[in-house]
Image (cartoon, rainbow, N blue to C red):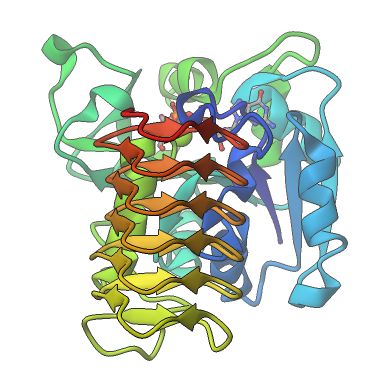
Length: 352
Ligand code: GDD
Ligand code: MG
């Protein structure tokens, strides 16, 4: 059985982080995001190949995962000539398949039991199976109504507030039968959510739901990107590098240097080659990427710093995200919600 990962979106809501780093490989702690999805797919012995469906900056992604042999999973790449939309991408990548396919949005992190979803799909002899998960506000997602037998009755992508009739949304995980792809045109972008699913409902095909209420998040906005790090540090989603760490999970790489007189409060993550100078303070929920340097009396709180940043003396960074190679001068203060793109330089005493 094959799995298609839809990983061709531009990640617009995560800009500027995604200008040089496509969303599927933004780091979650020290690993590109797709690693976490591949870990999940590897747990299903039946899945013998993963097809990465790409269109935005595909080379950057291929360079990281190669043919998958280092990860013990077979990976193939399909690069669209132009973005074909979610349905067009599935058809383009899965054109010659005949068996059911697992399809995954390339930006969701979850601990779902995929084998159970596949079992349900087979047991009900479904043409399509969709995973649903409850959320507080469905307006940013695809809302899905089902009947008591678990058949999908209505699909509304990005519903307005007055269209919200359930808190169940599309989790971006499907099992699909390729013989239903005939209705997807080959030459224009086509949406799985707005066109393909509604067409299954219209034609009364067996389109069923699998309800999942365990851990699930879409990492596609700065708030959710920050949330996913906090959830992992809180032990809500268990994975490396926090696998065997007791609370408060403080993960410090063996070769990181924390000078005497610096303070580190867990939970937090300090990666390889980091230098924390005397008097600096690393507060809770901070993530300090590889080779980053935090100078004397600087303080970091709840912020995510990608590799090779420098935070100069007495600077303070709170609840912000810094891309790679950012340089903050002395006494700079960066606050709530700021997202700095790669290579940002802030002059001494800047407030942002
Ligand atoms: N190959 C390819 N080509 N991939 C694409 C394309 C395309 O043209 N367009 C989007 N994708 C990929 C994105 O990279 C992402 O992994 C996935 O498809 C979904 O696109 P998003 O842009 O992240 O959609 P969304 O988050 O607004 O909504 C989708 O996900 C929600 C769950 O997170 C929908 O599927 C909603 O119904 C769903 O609730
Ligand atoms: Mg998304």
